[in-house]
Amino acid sequence: MRRYYLHTRYNGIFYAELVNPITGGKLAARSTGTRNRDEALLAVAKWLETGIPTGRARKPRTLETAAGIENVLKAVRKTDLNPDDALRIVTALKDRGLIDIAAVKSGKGAVSFTEFLEEFWDYTASPYVREKLAHGHSLGKRHCYESMSRFSRYWKPAFQGRRLDSITRKDLRDFSLGLAEGGLAPASINKIMATGTTCLSWAFREGMIPADPTVGLVNFSGEAKKRGVLTPLEVQALFAAFWKDKRAYTASILACTTGMRSGEVLALHKSDIEEKTLNIRHSWSDFDGLKTPKNGESRRVPLLPEVREKLLALAGENPHGPEGFIFYGLLKDKPIDRSILLNGLHDALTAIGIDAAGRGIVFHSWRHYYAARMADRMTADQVSRITGHKSKAVFEKYADHLIAENLEAAGAIGAEVFRNVLSFRKGA
Image (cartoon, rainbow, N blue to C red; front, side, top):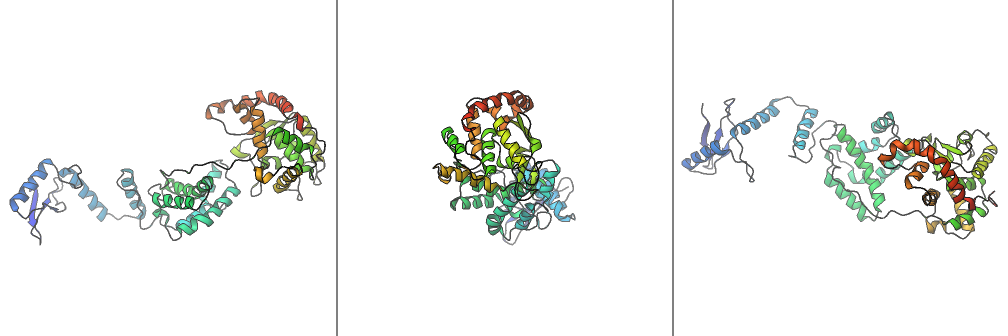
């Protein structure tokens, strides 16, 4: 069997067609780079001995390897392929590191990126949301609402008209740098970027696009705006001042002495109150209503007697009945609007001469205050069991034991730490 065929083209240069040693078919013609027949024959002989040159200083390829590639190309040309087949092929090339990202003409990824992203954050229509909820993950309507707002403001104008499978890492990097040049804070940029990158990573895992363009992207770093925290003397003066709304006052004294989040405060019912502890079983969201606390875990916190008394009194004053929300609002099935809690706090701070806005004091500041004061007397891990912060994984298996062991001690320490703010002289 012949090993090659030699012929010239219109320019006089000799081309060689090597023969596939398995099938006997001719491989694609290759230029010898010379118009001299003897030099062409020597070049082909060298190819057969040392390998066929591939250009760009790459290692020469054996005749068997070259034949194998020709067989692959012929199979691609002759086989009836659909878009999913094409996606599998480009994915295999991506896995070999031969291409960065490729888009097939049609298929799962051949859809409008902005339309896909809009549906992705639609709480009622999103397959991503359904998947998360089906696996027991916490994903609230508020998160989807905020992501949809970021999509409409930032992503939609920048990527209108683009296909899902056309988005590259360079696109994302340029987009993020544009956000930074616009003067946005690092934390804001990271949240905006997560709106799109979460969607793209999910689309890759679902086999809709051949590569994940988010791989290798770097988050922006920088000092986040810190919430202000009052001093113990300021807190003592604050709770000795007059408060216009008893619910706002009681909510602040509760958060101050337990480190509870505002949503957890709003969700409280009389049935959550025990003799010395408080059960944190729910959180209130204006979008989702009652839901599990952040991180999806219930917990118990020590409840000081004076604060317990205030909670029971407030529950007894509920016009909708004592079994409703302790921090009742106008409607039976909804607690007080959280803005009333914040406004009540700010009004009381203004009354004692503290600029809440200038100091960055918000309702969540109580959580920081509690953690800081209790950390003076307990370990950080012990405090995290009370506040519900996620701790290092090495401590996870001890969580229940630590809570049970420390609740009584935390209650005693809290009584001492907060004794100067429990006089209730003018609170309401």
